[in-house]
Length: 108
Image 1: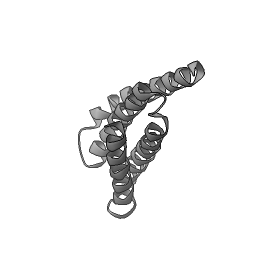
Image 2: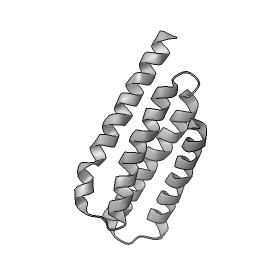
Image 3: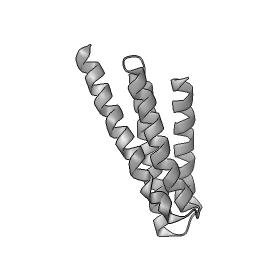
């Protein structure tokens, strides 16, 4: 399931980046789509790479990236800017996922 979700996440990230590059005029929205897409894509690939050794950490990377990116995507599409206060929760979860992965690799 993690691999499936990671692949869907990567596809969404590519779509968001393409939309930001070709379908949005507002510079701030372009930045949000680019940043969200980059972080989401990196963490989707990372989740696939580590899911055999650190399955829980891989899941946490995907959840964190989803929260981070989706709040940015929503704001780029016109959602209220207060969603920006939720974005750091995703970033924190990504950091925790990387720390969990580091611990998992250290133990093996």
